[in-house]
Length: 55
Image (cartoon, rainbow, N blue to C red; front, side, top):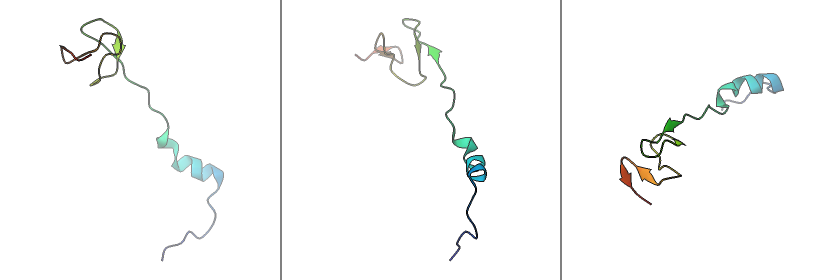
């Protein structure tokens, strides 16, 4: 079976995980109330999604 030959240093481990960091969250304006909301999600302030009142 494949086994790592030696211990991976802290720096090499972190370099391999560099692309796992948090991404910048996109925000868009709600067409109903103008508040910033996440795309493809219900608006938290007015409760609209896809031009329909859900809440």
